[in-house]
Amino acid sequence: MKESKIRTIDYSNTRITGGFWKQKQQLVRRVTAKAVYDRFSDTGRIRAFRFDWKEGMPDKPHFFWDSDVAKWMEGAAYMLAQKPDARLEKKVDDLVDLIEKNQCEDGYFNIFFTVVDPESRFKNRDWHELYCAGHLTEAAVAYYQATGKRKFLDCMCRYVDYIEKRFVTDADTPFATPGHEEIELALVRLYECTKEVRYLNLAKHFVDMRGHDELCLPDWMAPSYAQSHLPVREQKTAEGHAVRAMYLYCGMADVAWHTDDAQLRAACEAIFDNVAEKRMYITGGIGSSGSGEAFTVDYDLPNLISYTESCAALALALFANRMLRFGADSKYSDVVERVIYNGFLSSLSLDGKSFFYQNPLEILPGMHTRDVSVKHKSVHLPPMQRSEVFACSCCPPNIVRFIPSIANMLYSDDGEVIYVHQFMQSLTTIERDGKMLVLEQNTRYPENGKVKIKLTGGDARVAVRIPGWFEGYTGKTEKGYAYFDLSDGDELSFDFTMKPIFVEARPEVVFDCGRYAVMRGPVLYCMEGADNGAVLRDIALDSHARFKYEKHPVLGVPQLSIRAWRTVREPNAPLYRRKTQNKEQVRAVLIPYYAFANRGESEMQVWHFVK
Image (cartoon, rainbow, N blue to C red; front, side, top):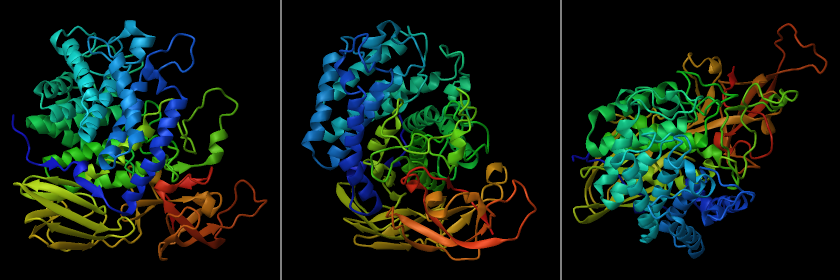
């Protein structure tokens, strides 16, 4: 079985030594991981692993609770790999003991379908059994690799063996593939860990079977919602539930990479291009519709009612990063960068304790009271404030697992070239022919664009991504990467000068016509009413003025300020009046999009009028 040469350098080979992402990793370790675990304890998710729930008891387990806790366990594993923590490890071990104790003799494991509805095991395609199995498997692999403990891994191998028996050997289930994808990519991870080819074959089986006369779809669900409208090699556009779709595309990319499947790779490339060029917000958020958390049609990217689930942004970064294994192309790594600094990071509050499930690009607080006289809202508006836990709490533990492992996005290697995809202050080791090459990045990115990359331990060819937002590089590039031959001790220096710029959307994105976004380097900026007063759309930024870059006095994050103009409003003016030229000069303040909604309810916008 032929495999591509390019491999992702695992996060465990990298230590984030300082700067922006070191601070975020410390916040997750110190605050976020505990906050999520505590809320999962409060809501019964942790206790559910005891399998002692009975009818009439509170906190009835839900069919996706296993996955919520599994993602937290995976995140804990990544943190343990970087730094021992006896208390954190015991929490995971206690859960693993309960998994082993309550696993069925045949290997099956699912809380809901054991203690709540055992008669429905593998009968309802859309009730997330295989999705939960996937997240448990990912957690088991991560925990084994972090600690060397096999118990969790062995439990999940037994479960996957049972899944293989039911879905392949016996083929006695009423559906052939999961409603909510995830197990596909998890099975590839299990194969990579154990070298058991049956697991790769099972992942390929689920990918290959998708779109072939599948059954067990709920009445309300169109086949495209579950990416079952066509065989996967014929799919060219991103359809349906955005998170399900991205997890499927990750699995497709994994299988294509391991099996050298050109058709499957071509489908992934076409789907990615459709997302990045026609169905992605400037934040890197995807899934514009609140009805089904789904993709809709090309260029349908409304701001006020944007859905843009946090998990979907994370999954897009995972998919884009996988595509880099087919060849270095900055269209993939630029999207990773867009996501991690904007549409994903906005989910986490600055204090690390609360989260957005949805990440709107505009907030008008008054609109949230428009349907007070009816029971059902006529328009879906995302919440204005983050929450500590949700009934569907998939996003918080996804943050717990993504930020500690974010170094997975940094490098890849094909034995001849080391590819530098992202910029973070870090120290990375790469084994080559028995030698340990060390790459050290020194940078304060994204505060500024100065990056130094030093190679020690040997010689290597190094390819560095030139960020798509930077237009000042004069050297030769290939698909957005500059190539250098380095000797032991050589250092590369870059200065990707970060000047705030105005960005416009294609005219087909009608919601943004006549308005402009502001970006500085990879970071998107927004205006909030807390800094600028009410009616943000009444402010026109002065395109001929200079932005001032400084620290926000309250939030402690960077801020941009610029001269702007606001229409003078008379207090008793009529509802409509003749156009006036009466403008007053103001100073508009913009903050990073990832930092909005940290000071209570406030108007917010990403797209601005400009004079």
